[in-house]
Length: 423
RNA sequence: GGUGAGGUGGCUGAGUGGUCGAAAGCACAUCUUUGCUAAAGAUGCGUAGCCUUAACAGCUACCGAGGGUUCGAAUCCCUCCCUCACCGCCA
Image: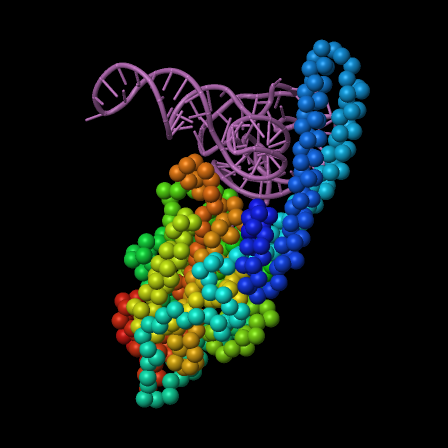
């Protein structure tokens, strides 16, 4: 959520930054400004009337104590109350409308975020390793996985539906060993605290991180309980501190969490993609940081480096791209995507998206920290996948496939997986 | 799921219709004094919004949440949520 004062006082800056995004928000900003003016004048009037009422009511109390007749003065207050109610309706309606508009407005891209309109304009930041070469035609993970009895798409479709999968045997074990490997890496080497959160959350959590109200069609919802299945651990983990005032000494707060992620992928063009690339449910280890505004950009770099470390240790070729203003997510101010090479696909797959949200989420969830001067401020929140599992599984299996269809397990994972090869 | 008790400021905890935004204690901050592995005293110390300002100040709202009664609600009524205890059930 943007600061209404920023919009009020630096309207041109706000409009200009938003103009770099995809979508047109100039008219929303204009409506916000007029609503804001109306809201404040109604609010001021209401407060003045409430002050009158409070004063007169006190006088009534005193007068009654002295045994005086107060009926005239009481009816005067009744009149004031009618006006309070009337003007209060206007004030409340304006307040609600303003909040709706603010919740529907995306974050300002940071000045460090490259300006561009489409994904084609995302600059490549760095490349690690090189595409591996094979003296045979590398196979797709679905072929490898099904041949080795690791992936059962039919069973997933049977018990749940398309874009759900059952991992079996070595496949299930590989998934589990990757989760353990990732959690151990981030908690013992990178200073994150492991958290294990509920997978169902309240609506207000999704509002806090920005999925609601605008992207409600993308999350699974249980109407009886009014609970939502988490689309990412970012939601429960960041909201751990919603409505809190944390101490500055606590920052940076760093969490690592493994959770499954549930996404409806409504209207998604790529849902027909074969295999594990785009599922309604997938595992992910998520990294979340809460930092001071001063530290957040440096923390984004370290967060991204923490995610990259995963791929380096597994020996997987990847590249890091920076999302341009036209391609960054709704709440993000700056984002790096990490894309791992999948030889069987012949493409790079996004396995991590590392973003600095600035104070955008903190405002939405009313998360603050008390600075050294005693003032409450909004901290910056960051998160990034460290990393998404299904696609990491794809890259791993496709990269380490052998001519005979077996998979070699990379060194770093062997202690977790328990053997060197899947036959 | 049932029954009972309860939800007040960072914490403990008073407060059952009228200067209560809320006593007191603890914690914390600043200052003073005595002096040195500390003690005493003074002052300050919630959040948000509005209106203003050079700054201070002022006003409004908030005592789990939302409604209601009333000239006036932390206090009375209704609904919901949460916590604790016991019972039931149970991975």
